[in-house]
Image 1 (cartoon, rainbow, N blue to C red):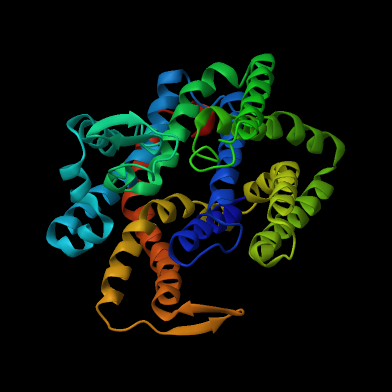
Image 2: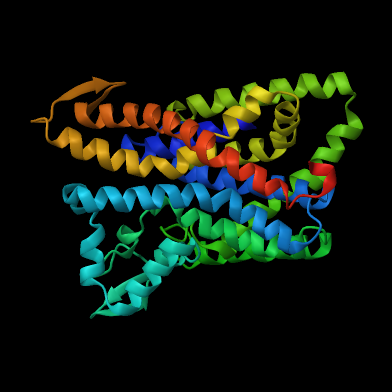
Length: 371
């Protein structure tokens, strides 16, 4: 599970810098939702890792916020000392052009992490902050004033965390919410919204189904595998499942299959095999270490892309080379490759100097059995 999580993070980096590779950015985000549902169910329902809800909330916030805060402050500092990069990102211009109400929402979400996903459903019309079904069709594109624009997914995660202690241990409620979420997705697709961004994967009520499917994978499939497979067998199948999913992740974008079909197959396979990848990770420290890079890679990569893109634009005219049958601008290819490499290195530093010290603090909010 750890290596897969980091490959999914890299898929998002490539999606923002080079194009759709690996499983693609959207699929990666939604697979992360499923993993989150699985892991949160594991720590709340099976391990009962926290003595109370407050400890759970504090622990989750400490997991997300410090690294986010470091990247947000660093981004703001770079925008301040290098106006050209800020101009490329359109950051300050949004605040200048947007109404006060939008500025307040953006400032609050940048500071707190909350409501960043809501920005994807807001726009500006006649200098008024309004609800929008398409955030790109706005007089001012508001998400461009998010210091860490990809962190809108954390708003979705935080909403799930708020609900998780109340629903994950109650199977009837969990299944009912899953049915409602899936029905809402079908309804939105039927009325023409569900197949268009931002409704495809940014709308929490429909994405809730993915978190809950992940939770059910923990509560139903993992016990099934443990019950039906002996220790030696489950180790064998965990290894096969993990390497199979890694292989599929690496070749997914090259498979000559209809996009919708292969995406549905990917999600079905991942849901079925995710418990086995968890078993694989639990027995291998190296896989967990790789997986721990996924969050900081995800959080830092847009800052890396901003700086690299700005730097390469100063080098001169753009040339193209043929890559896998497509003509790709050299600067875009370089940005894509360097973004992955630098983001991985940056993530290691973030874990070493931010994540590790915070982990000591997080341990104070875990139950005795988790220490």
